[in-house]
Length: 444
Image 1 (tube, rainbow, N blue to C red):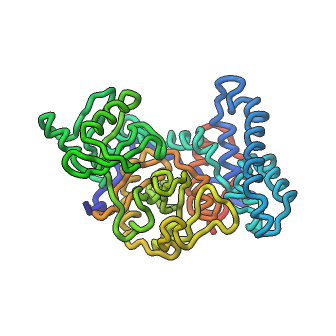
Image 2: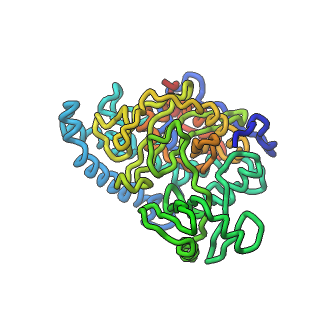
Image 3: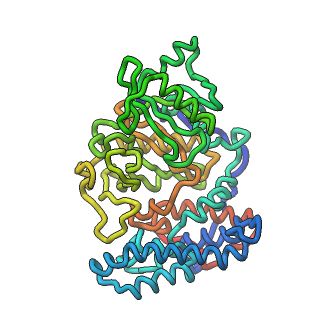
């Protein structure tokens, strides 16, 4: 599956990029997170009714109530560990989260998830936090809107079928498609009679909704031979049962049927049944060139039946060397909830070298050159025995867990200077002048 990706270039743009310089020389700077929230409130919020979170009631009552509930939930779960291990009193923890809510107008749970109690600048780091609320609810859509529709319309990254076909047409290594099943009807990628089409299922197969986020609705069947399969829970099924099951599911939503990929032997000991992916963030610069700003190895516990848990594990990938940092998860936020070895498989993680990292990085950049109608993309790339393979591209990638894994706010990361220029363009297009206090910090 190894391919020469150096020949894959971006399509020609049909309009100028229109970058503007910001902030003015000598202006006082604040974090990129504050800037994101300012633009989000000014240009992205379009209330549909009185109770919409974008309305005045939503902004001043509903969202503060939601944040208060999160403050209570995460404090109950984490305050004692922070007090025992770091000596931070409950009153200090509560006051810090209150400041995050009211001064920085952001999610108070980052006090625990990003361990602000250990940072020299404490809650002031909230200025550099870029939250999932603004990214997923309008800001990222506005940023993508700045890019010209070079294919006539934007390529749907949410439609897994359309995305896969687009990547294949561009020559990118991507997971193959056996067929699509919608409303009980099978459409196979191969051409042949009905018997040979269904015989293409005689292998390990992976099923996921055509339109879905994350790992919702995924399942797989292991081929045992002689028309027998085993599902993810260890139950044996006949080929007819599997076909009937998939056909029935397709009456509710279209499904994509693909070969089940397996992890490269070099990393296979960090998972058991699931396919791990590298989440790689790429962002365009002012010359429309993609740059990698973050990367982490992701392991989904909910796809591991024997682990009986729903947490997501991740470890930061050093962009220069390809070495993994310590492992953490998205549930346990105690100060010591970082592991050198995988807590479920005992496989070594911290310091582990991903020898194929240069190929993974090259593939992410090549993918963004093809999908240049998006400003920022979060790539999910699997490392298989045949090499790196694109699984998905995320137009609205989660930034909350990313900042925990990297132990760094986006405003202090390599994404900040790139994102600031796109936000300046957005402010320019929206027709308002950004306050001179908004700006970016230099990456740490």
